[in-house]
Length: 149
Ligand code: ZN
Image (tube, rainbow, N blue to C red; front, side, top):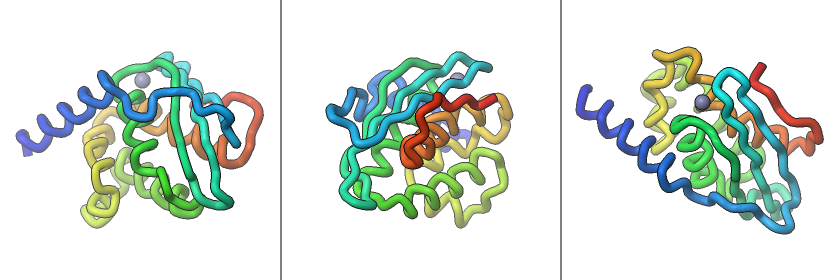
């Protein structure tokens, strides 16, 4: 498993150094801000919707490698997905990063499975899920910033 772990770390580092979809969407149909006070991660998620489908998604902000890589990979995974599919993917992702998911869930997660090692570091779970909580707030059209506290 050590090799796989190294590969996961490499993927996370690569995304944190060169985040995908890192820009402001103008005009955005929805946007929300998220903040993780424990680590100082702070991101804004932007969405353009096509009825119930995510046509485009982007983010901006700053944070640790895990939070940034998670936001980057989340935007890659969600483009073209419906709201329902996005919720399902988040539930799945949440189970894996909190160590409740089995192998089956990791297979469904695809690339996002690189975050499975996060379950060994409970404080890092908030880093990994911040972008997702912020996404949910954006989809629900919440105005106030989301905090993991
Ligand atoms: Zn963090």
